[in-house]
Amino acid sequence: MIRTLVVDDDFRVARIHASRVAKIEGYECVGEAHTAAEAREAVQRLKPDLLLLDVYLPDEDGISLLRSLQGAGEKLDAVMITAARDLETVRAAMRGGAVYYLVKPFGFEQLQTQLEAYRRWRQEAESRTVADQATVDQLFSLRRTAPPAKGPRRLPPTMQKVLDMVVHSTEPLGASEIAGSVGISRPTAQRYLSELERKGLVDLHLAYGSTGRPVNTYLPRKG
Image 1 (tube, one colour):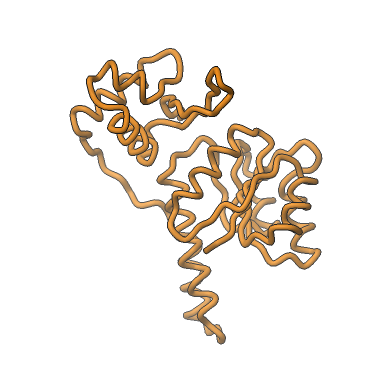
Image 2 (cartoon, rainbow, N blue to C red):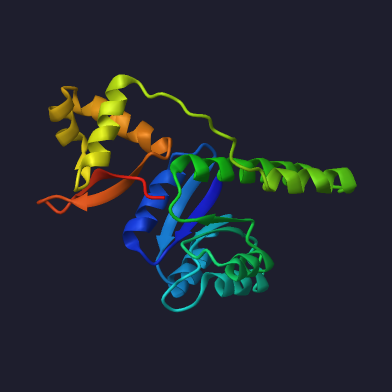
């Protein structure tokens, strides 16, 4: 299992990323951190293999954090996850040792594709003891695997109704509300919502009910 630490200053976003990582085969989310200081402590304590790391943290930028951790001898990689779109930030992340760079917002499929590529790269790298040019070329191509091209696909009619409800709602919707309106069971509504999230068509939004417990609700994906 690839032990993964999520580092994002937004508690809600960190929780969403952590839940997505936990769904991907071969990955284990070992914790969340919301500042560079928390991340340093968590790295020492949890020994992750991979960071999902935001560039903008309240006490230090993520690129500087990654450089200092690697400079201190920590054997870990990082996928930068951020809203920063300027090219210089991307270049700095690459120079700082990031294996990939994901720009928010992105769907579950995009994250899954890149983490699966990283897992294949890591497995291949660990299985080799001698690196000739062909091996080096193969490892670099594995790490840079791009998401597969996707053609238009029609959704099943009921799933399309669920998507339409989320898209046209002015507020986040949960499975219970959708089940009552569409005429399906709550577990079926939740299954459709999870599938729509996996396809990158809706985004998970954690809300809190009257009891204070988190409730999964969904918004249309932006961008």
